[in-house]
Image (cartoon, rainbow, N blue to C red; front, top):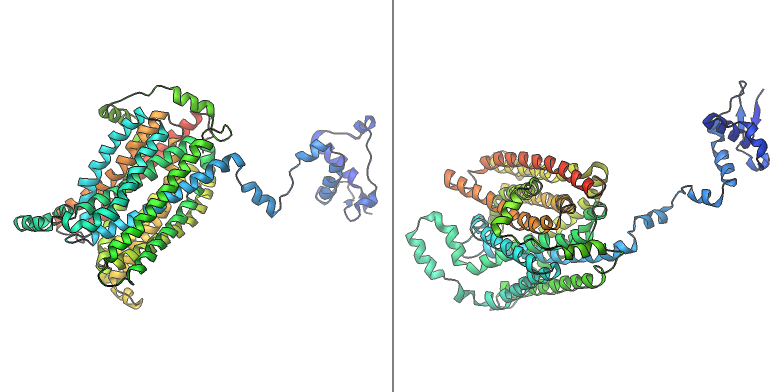
Amino acid sequence: MMKYATPITCLVVLLQSASGFSPSSLQSKHLTCPSPSSFAGSTTKINNHGSINLLQCNTSIKESSRLYMSDGEAAAVPQKKGFVGKMKSKIPPAAERKKLVPLALMFFFILFNYTILRDTKDVLMVTAKGSGAEVIPFIKTYVNLPTAIGFTALYSKLCDRMEQKNVFYTCTIPFLFFFLAFAFVIYPNVGALHPHAFVDKIALALPEGFGAPLAIVRNWSFAVFYVMAEMWGSVVASLLFWSFANEVTTVDEAKKYYPLFGLGANVALIFSGQYVRFVSTLRANLPPGVDPWGMSLKYLMGAVAVSGGCLVSIFSYMQRNVMTDPACVDQEKQAERKKKKKVKMTLKDSAKFLVSSPYIRDLAMLVISYGMCINLVEVSWKSKLKAAYPDPNAYSSFMGNFSSATGSVTLVMMLLGRKIFQKFGWRKAAMVTPTMIGVTGLAFYALTIFAPFFAPIAASMGTTPLMLAVFVGAAQNILSKSSKYSLFDPCKEMAYIPLDQDSKTKGKAAVDVVGNPLGKSGGAMIQQILIFGVGSLAAATPYLAGILGVLLFFWYKAINSLAGQFEEAMEASGETPM
């Protein structure tokens, strides 16, 4: 015969089984119980052996127990959040929003400019008279790298003599003046400034292999623009912005927000890409006698100047309103940093200091490996891109769509990046970018090496092997760059936060400003050696694929080494290891 127990009976038995609670202890307590009728539909059966089915009385126990809780105890019980509550919980606190929103806007304007500059520099050099994609390795090796080394020495001096905010202004504003001057002063006078006749005479007396270096001399103002555009990415985006971001955020905040930090910035890729495309369409409707590319440069560099002005204004706002707010930035640490006497080192001493640090060496290996790997694939792709789009307007329009696609894919990767950090930690997140470059890069090389095999496939798709290689190479670049923006950059920047101030400033300058062009020029040097050795870039492709595999091995090795040091540095600084 079945018997029934009220919820209070279930509660007594549950407490008795869990913590030795006995009914006798109730004698000294006043305990009232709601009537059984109030629990209609939630009574519990007791079987013939007298045991209680606790699963069936679970709901009743919860309801009963809440009746006897104090207000504090009831508040401590976690409540299920609705959709609105969940959304509110994901919004950063006001103090964090005060610094994260301006930082995101700064990154937006920096990448808006860099995308326009990157697309413009390629169009200028690749389509210039007597030039082509083969010129890029020589610029990166013999022009960009020495410039980067010289800037690093200058930046080290500026850091010794100025406050960090003044270093930002001193390094950023000259870029904006140069880009305006190039569009409105230099480019309209390239006919008089570029020594075409002089270079033509020299070319007659030199072997054909000197064509690329001579193209740099022939189009020297374009080469200077190319280097300045590259330096904007290395100096303003990688060095100045991230140094400032690392100064105002903690490691815990970086874990949460750095993967999402670039969301606004990568919207900039979409906007800037479409702006470049829009300017390209304006060129098609110009009357005869108007230089279409000269007009485009004025529109493009005008947008760069306006965007740069917004960047400087936001930085100034943060200096006045965020850096002085104790809720946003630890004022004691700021004061200690200002009081700390700066150690002035020569360039030689700085180099010794950096080389002696395994932590900085591993960071440099990450940056150099990325630069070399992406360069090995990118130059081969751009040579095919020029063959497919020899006209500057068509080339520029394609690059605009390419930038927009990169931004769209990066937005998705940013959302995934935060989940990857939370679930797998820093080490696994850092491994995504080399894996992406390895898989997509080897696929592009396979398409190039085995082009005859893929010819029937291309024909069945209604295209040519050249266009198929262009689109596969574009996909490779998009996926590689999106994983860089969403995972590689946040991983790299998080690693700087636990370091001391000298390592953050001078170490970061060496890694980002020198390491990045060193990686690209290293890849360019490899290509030059192979071209001289085997005769052409196409013939060197199998060797480039093998070298790519070797570089990826050292990249993975540096990641594993740095991951252990990063965790130790966070523990030493009191941060939570990832």
